[in-house]
Length: 559
Image 1 (cartoon, rainbow, N blue to C red):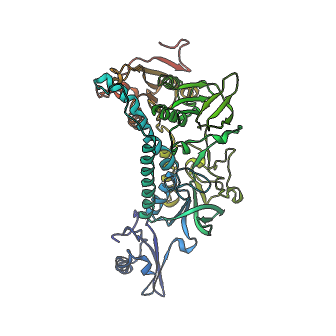
Image 2: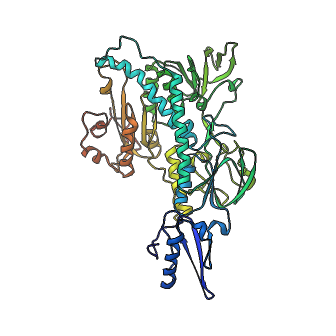
């Protein structure tokens, strides 16, 4: 212990109660793992004695339980088994747990056993993102992109004799599985290295301060905690139609043993367009069907139209404004899908449902209603601005709250939880100007308001747009346009929205997200020297607005 007094950071774990004599009592917190401590002010004599004690026993707190009349207790042992007990080992749960432990809390975490496909009894450290979401999906997106690039290469002088390289689905899935199993192991070691005690099994809340853990062998043990954190994530949703069980979700799609020759992807959200691009890129005859006129509801309308055009230009069949009504399985294993209206039946090998996700509050049952935790109509945990539920000692982060279901958002919420609960610094997650991406082909990236949102907010905005053929395919002979858009508040000159469809859009938008977070103006964009030649430079070279929209816009928009 190097110093005492105000400003010392919170300790990692061990609470020491010193009783040097019959008339004196004082306490301090010793860092059992990191050698740092937070000490209250006390006499110089006692301070010297404590320095000697902690230097000897800080690395071995268990040995310091009874040392020369000194009683040592962990803070959690005074009332509870843990300061924090987390249910769910996905991105949000792991981040909140390990950072809380590093900041001084005693933390336990329970997660279901690993499996690539989630269920009421299977899950795994890393959660949806690592095991059956962002990471494996992006690996398959990378793989699927090569198909178009092999074809484009011919325009740049590469001659592969008119035949494409052979592709092995089995080899790709095997490599993907090896990678996510490696990451699953890393998540376990991260928890270990940060002093989080992890349990494999199912967690159920049995009281405001108690969690029942059912181990893999069926053994049930109850642990107490000052605070409980819910972070079980979400899962894919099946529509309620005859034969829906014949379909698969993104979980199974990422673990298919053989590549389907024909696939129907049902849904118009980001998961649907991403997987449609994946299957199409690997040569599967792909159909995407959604009930709206355009995909990606909630995104900017011009972005949606561009994506719809690109889906068709990539060679897949697009069925808009339709709903499947039933699925029948043939003797040969193929599936017959019927639709509403006068649409013809479609025969495919696989149907993938990408029709939404629901919070994991009942698979397995978390016992939340019984203890008074409020759930909304979709089963999501209702929380306040600080991620606190209707039971003050129970908190929730990530997809289970159905606020903004993105991995980086869950990480942010986990960090805010640590600041609020462990450090005593009430911190609200900040959801303004969060950049996001859709890894369709080509990808979409966006930050800030859409044009429609800006108008609805009462703003008057200048809209800048640019559509062009990316240089990367300029010699390939492929018809595919990139699209870029800036939305600028006329009254403040602030850029309030930025959108892009095209190669590298996600990489570009991360930097733009920083600019919008800092409140960048259009004048500052204009004063920025672009990187040439690049697509990104278009964002700092658009000078003439395409139109003005909003309350103060002219009747006829500028063209």
